[in-house]
Each structure stands twice: as C-alpha cells, then as structure tokens.
Image (cartoon, rainbow over all chains, first blue to last red; front, top):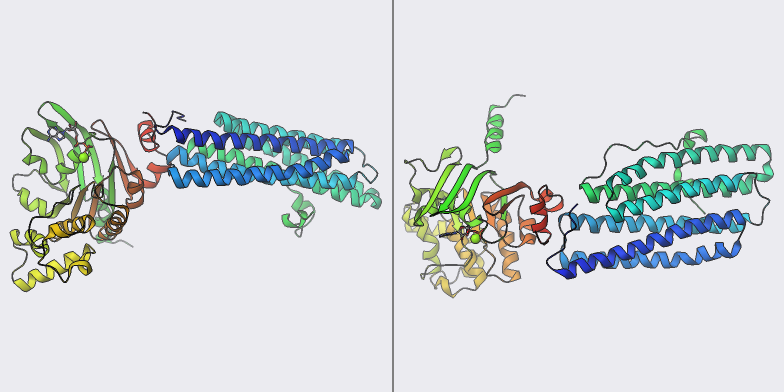
Length: 246
Length: 265
Ligand SMILES: Nc1ncnc2c1ncn2[C@@H]1O[C@H](COP(=O)(O)OP(=O)(O)O)[C@@H](O)[C@H]1O
Ligand SMILES: [Mg+2]
C-alpha cells in the first residue's frame, strides 16, 4: 500500500495524530488484559482495582479517536486508502474499547473470586487462554501499524485456537460443578471470564479483518472457521447474550 | 423468457452510448492523447478527472468533433455514437453537435435575450415550426435547466445580466434545447459559488435521467457526488475507468490513488 506523503502536509500530520492515539489505546488495552489476568491468578485486589479504574482512560482515547476521525472526514474528505484508513481506525478503536470493557469485567470478577476457595488448575488454564488472546491482540496491532497482510491473515485464522481453549475450559468447569455443587458460584464466574476472553478473541479477529480491508480494499468474505460449539453442548437456550451479563 | 428487445438493449448498453477505440490526438507534433478506449454509458453521469493538461478537454472535444475547428489538431481512431461512426463523411458536424451538446467552464451566454439564447440552437436546426412551437421549446428547456421560475417574467432581458450560476444554467438550457443525446460539460462549476454549484449538480443528476452526461471536473468531491462512472486521465492516457465508488474507495492504479488522495505522485 502506498504511504507516500500528501501534498497538503497537514493531512499527514492529522493521520499521524490518529495513528498515535490508536497505538496508545492498543498499548493500554493490552496492558489491561495482562494485568487483569495476573490479578486473577495472584488474587491481587489492588491490581484488579487499577485495571477497573484504567478503563476510563481507554474510553477517553476511543472518544478522542472518534472526534479526530470525524474531523478528518469533515475537513479533508479522505478518499481511497485514506478513506479506508479512517474507517478501519474507527472500527479498530471500537473493538479495542470492547476488549477494554471485557478486561474491566474480568478484573471485577477476580475481586469476587479472591474471596472464594480456588478451583484446581482453573487460573492456570485461564492464563494460558489470556496469553493466547494477548498475543493475538499484539499481532493484530502490529499488522495494523506495519500494514502486514500476512500477519493479519494469521491472526484471523488464529482465533480458532482461542475458541478451542474456551471449549476445553467450558467442559472443565462443567466437570467441577458436577463433582461438587459448592464450586458452582466460582465456576460460573470463571466461565464468564473465559467467555469474555473468547469474545475478545472475536473482536481481535475483527481488527485483523479491518487491517485486511485497509490493505486490500476488501473484507475477507469466506466464513472464518468457528470452533465455539458450547452452545450445542449446553442446549439451545444458551444464547450468547445470556452469558454476557455481569 | 426470451425477450428480443431486452437482448438488444443489453447489447446496446454493453457497447455504450458513445464508444471510442484507439483515439489519438495530436496538436501539431504534440501527442495530447494516446490510444484511448472507452465506452460511455447512456442515462448516467461519467466524470473525467486528472491533472491539468492530461487531455480531458481534448477528449471531450473529440466526442462532438469540436477539435475539427482547431487548426493543426489531428484526431485518429474510431468514435461511435449509438454505433455510428462520427467521422463518417456523411455525418454533418453541425448536426452532430446538436446531438452531442456542450457546456463550457465559463458561462458564455450570447449577448442576446434569455429567450434568444435558448432559441438559438432550435432555430438553426429548424426544430420549431412556429413562434408557439418555439415558446414551448424555450420554456421546456428553461424548466429542465431549473431556471424557468427565475426568468419567466424577464425572458427578453439580456442573458448576460443574470448571476453566474443563472448564466451557467442558461447555457445548459441552450445546450439541451436541441434535445441532445449526450451532454458534455467542461468544468461547468469552476466559476461558480457553492450554492450555484450545488444547483448545477442537482440539475446534472436530473439530466442524467434523459441524457448521457460527461463532466470534466477538478473537484474530486464533485466527481464522487455526481457521477456513476469515473475515468482518470494522466499524461494523455486513460489510466483507469470504472464505477465511481470503486475508483474512490479502492482504485487499481497507483497513479489514480496518488491523484485522488492528493499525494505526490
Ligand atoms: N488548442 C491547442 N493547441 C495546442 N495544444 C493544445 C491545445 N489544446 C490543448 N493542447 C495541449 O494538449 C494537452 C491536453 O490539454 P487539455 O485537453 O486542455 O487538458 P485538460 O483539459 O486535461 O487540462 C496539453 O498538453 C495542452 O497543452
Ligand atoms: Mg480542460
């Protein structure tokens, strides 16, 4: 993709401003995910609290990106790759904002879980899933910054692994709950956490798709292999929304 | 279901209202256009964009043989209007220009009344048999050009006394008074303010219901607002031609991309 300079140099400066905001936002969201998972594993309530408070900064950055992109559309009427850039940036910022919300939700649940007996092996499994998602997020953002089509494709396909991890965790938690009903509350929270991480994976896939659109001008159209079969395992009534409520 | 009429109209559409093949233009030894192939759709707006001097006006003038009037200008290649060769010796260039009308950058009404400006074309082509006939043609053309309400009470005032935007609409009324099939517009809004520009754009939109409209414009926004097809010219070449939407969101050629995004090419 052509990244030559504009004749109107202020246009380039506007684009650089937006890119810098998005890079900062990506950094904050990545850190929120890492910290939230660490807070869960180490039962660190202060760290969880810091993650919850940090979400405001992420929201503020998204808003600022919205303002800057709207301004750029109004004043510079971007076309072609510039237009795709602005549209992709807005959508990526929205996806990151959602990921930030999930991290906040995760931190909130980790505070509740810190008051309960630990479930064997659960926080280790959650951490592995979190690590996988964080790597996906880092790769998606790198693909954006470097306009790396191959990396973006890799991220898009990589979400399959996250879905698989979620399926495995889902069964693990079911087993714990069936073995001892006293585990149910903790397992429900852990399950919501796993589901939140799985949803982050979907938003990261969305980011990768925006990068593909930015570079090629086309959204990938072939349906991505989806590996979340838990809706079938748990019966039809388990609509996605039902698993979402905090 | 087999429909002969449909099949024919599809074939006509595929070939375009106007189709040009291998068009070359020379001004003396200057090679101004190189090997242009294009099919221009009927009842649609086609925009020609590109840097100054790339040959947009030259190509536009090929379509109604206005280049014939420029000394030293040589046009090669095949240009067809509804499949008819416009360079055929049997084609009268004056008749051709009644079928392929033109509007210029600067509004250039004749120093005559508003009425006579519009009546000029129909009069020389003998399109109205009586004064009453002519009144109908003039009113219809002024209405189509969205000027009737502004001038109905002063048809015999000088056309040059109108505002810039009104003068340009008068020129459009004059161009469409001969019921052309193709309307060529060479930067028709570059001398107009934004309100007059918007009015002309609205008009172009409506005219495209009846005519094939070709507009040369330096405004990317105007091209994207008014046209369904866009052709990008560069150094005498037709570099890219496609749906306006595609050209403005995902152009194929890097020269198009650099031009429309305002990059140093
Ligand atoms: N009447 C003319 N005599 C000689 N050269 C001309 C004439 N008109 C245009 N040209 C040359 O032909 C090229 C294309 O010009 P033109 O069609 O006016 O470009 P555009 O409309 O895209 O600005 C330019 O190099 C210009 O100098
Ligand atoms: Mg010109």
